[in-house]
Image: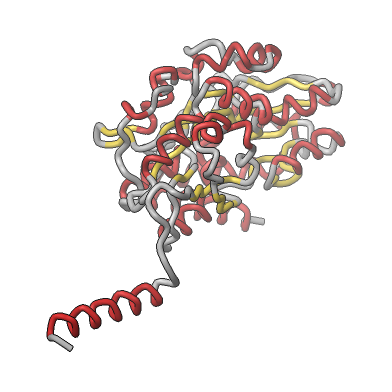
Length: 353
């Protein structure tokens, strides 16, 4: 055997060993698509144009139950192509180098999106996330169970609602709620203001019946009448109860509703970038986006989706009025330190007797 043949054999054996160590052959680029996603958003009607464009590709979904879980999974090295976090987490993905800057010219539907929403996905002058779904956190009230309907976040502290309020069990949401009630910018608080926010949340406890942890719980509490005022509730609370015939109002507080947008980014390590762009473009197609929004009672990022939405939802949530996007208090990307501070304060509040 010649020296060259020996070298070739050695190289083949080394390649085989490396392949075995990696668990087999890697898929060729753009032959699969892995989506890190909330459960429920895998519905084919939300990405039908992708299925028509790539009938041979079935997206593979890895589901998460909350943003912290998704971020932890992405940080751990899980190989995904597309991820769907909400806006207050976007900055952490960018800072950690988990997602790539996006070329919006590759998204033919991008110019149909509300610019007020797309700007939230821009970091250091580059677009990293594409918004898809947006919604409110506000106050859902059973109007038949109260003498007065609250019209501000500060009204949650009114003694007339003693024992009638449930609030979202979230450090971020409760911190924002108390900050707006006190007239503070929640993203630029001093240590003294943070202590005041903590004490203000403790002062809310006589009005609280419970803390709610998911939408099914708060919707049931409002439907049963155990709770008359649901704080930090999402659009679905009003829509579900209204559909069931309850007398409900979705408050637009004088301080402004809290709002959030969620959307899609592409992994910095993706080898399926072409498919990832095609998938995101399918999601932000007008009809696809409307299908999702109608199912979840959300707002759609695509302006052309609005005429395709349930007119009742458009009227109540003002989805046809772009000015509400500027007037709402959209959640900002949080640093890890901010998130930890808010969570610590909320845990201390709940521990207070």
